[in-house]
Image: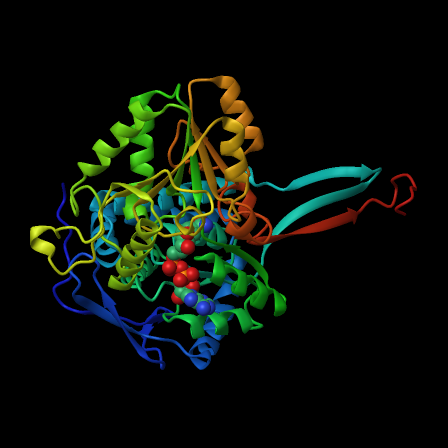
Length: 492
Ligand code: NAD
């Protein structure tokens, strides 16, 4: 177990523009570590004027970067990969200190980000466009071109991974990128900026603006930004999609989730208990892929007892991280209090747990399991974003699928079974962008794209993998004829 190193001195987070650190001119915002509850730094929010400076700088840098060949851009990205691997532990400590994750979770998130970078590196070999003689002497061709200046707005829960879903592909395709990190977890952005600068990314190709809602709105309204990717809650994703589209940007906005796991009585008990507990307690339930509703079909007592036992054995700070703010802990307590008052059976109670000895002032909430919950209850419908598993008992697979399909969200859904027929029916009928069979967190690995449907994603395309290429670039269609001698045809 690696003990997270919490910054001893407060870290100032400024904007990174044109290779310099510049203070934003908006309000100061404090950054707290969820593990200790202590203030570990602050940021200076950016105003619309700060953003205008940033965009001008990005536009200038975009020209030179786009003029390089993809192989030259990949040379920089390859060095960035080496530096990120070298700095992996240092970055993971900062991610944990500001987001509350365990060290292992932070490292895993960064590795997933590096995997996206590796996919971006492959584009120099595989994304060769297409060329064909469509009529005698007449050739049609695809050429992929960058959009210019693009932006990414990211949530608190993956301070390194989510920006690394976006930046490697957007940059490799020749765009300049403006990143607005979460105001709750901005310190990681300093280390990523340094890594790309050391790799030789020209100044201004990656710029960072700190801030919250106002900075996001300035990004969405700015005519100098061609596309914006957003990852965060559904309520904000909807607003971002509408506002960015209104200023004629290409927008992809990933939202929140309420993910279901169907547990069949024939599931392998070990595999199911492991997968389900890892899914609802990993990152303390603060991930969009966390299973939060367990649809237990028929007699599954032998597996449910193992789930309870394993979840009860997790030690706060060692095996499960902290909750991002005290306010979020309060909301979790209230949600469970309310469910209890409505008669819900509490199988495992994680409210107001004893804090780990060294972290008495951190923000803690232990694994919680609610049983025999009705499908209409608030805890069955809303995203709680904490380590709470709501069990709904179902008579058969059809009932479980009906509940899963009734959710407004559509990020992930999984089934635990040993029956191929059940698995195939689930894969066909589950209404989710990412479906798992005997996998608790069905995150696709590159080159398969990440992304949900319904209220979990607004906009076209995907944020990673092959589905992201057409989001971060345009395909120019070129038609040429050079030979006068070639036979006359309808394109003459
Ligand atoms: P959030 O929506 O509060 O914030 C996300 C970003 O939007 C931050 O950068 C924040 O500064 C900005 N923001 C906040 N309020 C805003 C507003 N009113 N207008 C404009 N911008 C605003 O989300 P969060 O709490 O940081 O992250 C948790 C949420 O993100 C959860 O709902 C989770 O499911 C979701 N999430 C989704 C995915 C996915 O891939 N679908 C991945 C990670 C997290």
